[in-house]
Each structure stands twice: as C-alpha cells, then as structure tokens.
Image (cartoon, rainbow, N blue to C red; front, side, top):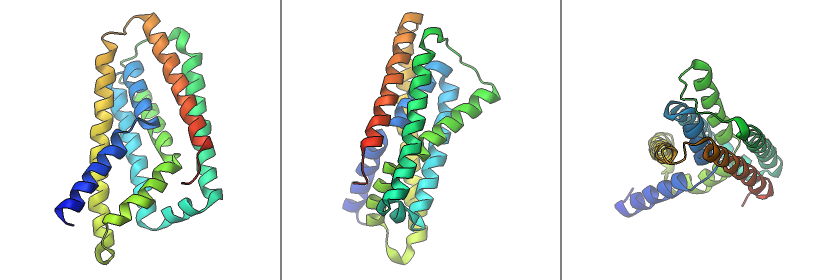
Length: 205
C-alpha cells in the first residue's frame, strides 16, 4: 500500500468513526447517566459488533447484505426498533434520572450489550465497509490484510468513542443539576428516535 493510499485509508477511518451516529450517542448517554466505566463497557460492545461486521465483510457475506433488500431491511428494522426503544426509555425515565457511577457487574453487562446491539443492527455500517474496505485489500493476501486493516479501524473507532465519552464526562460538570440532566435525557431520547427514523427511511445506497 503506497503512502497516498494509506493516508486516504486513515482519513476515511477517522471520518467513519468520528461521524456522530447511534454509537456515539449511546456512548455519551452511558457516560452521563452511568459514568465513565459504563461508557467504556458500552464501547467494548460497540467494538465487538464492529468486529462482527468486519468478519462478515472479510468472508464475503457483506456483499449479500449490501445487495439483498430483504437482508438489509431485516437488519434495518431490528436496529430502528431498538433505537426507538432506547429513545422511549430515555424520555420515560427523564423525570427520575440520577447519576449512577456504578461499577456493578449488571450495569457493565447492560452497557456492553447495549453497545453491541446498537452497532450490530446498523446495516449502513456493513454497506459502508463493503464499499470501502476492499479498495485497500490486495486479493493475493486478503485474509492477512483484512485482519490488519480491521484492527486499525477498531483502534480508531475506540479512540473516537473514548473521545465522545470524555467530552460528555466533562459536559457533566456543567449540567449536573437534576433539571439539566432531565433535559439531556430528553435530548438523547429524541436523538435516538430521530436516528431510528433516519435508519428506517434509509436505503442500501
């Protein structure tokens, strides 16, 4: 891979990971409501789902999802429904939000599962990786290259999500009053629902 192609790959990864989406919103929400520890477990869940997407693309199944309207819509409706559920729960619980910097196993597991499901049920991620990743893979050594490039994508995405978690943690210093937290929860709930609508209205391209 030439330096110019590598640079293009790096910039594309940064744009992909730092673009605000459901994963970023979920991470920020977890950081504010459950603390930085729960946000980290949410990020682990996001990356596990990203690894599943990368595996799907590397073995050729990503092309099937990208080209099959039925498969794409199936994942899309599950993802949209889950985002609506998260949004409704945020709005429903906005009246009694409390800071829970809890490190219990239940809280960690819930955060991890939440991140995993949010990312796994985003078919646009698979479509993007199908269109993006093969351009930087040499067919003669595709398996090894998919592993190296996939590791770099996960690394950049971890940095991006940790940045969002840190930003929201700092934000909490200025919005720690119950009334402010209620508004933030309402905003997160509305954003989840908006992202769900955008996902449900999206097509494969």
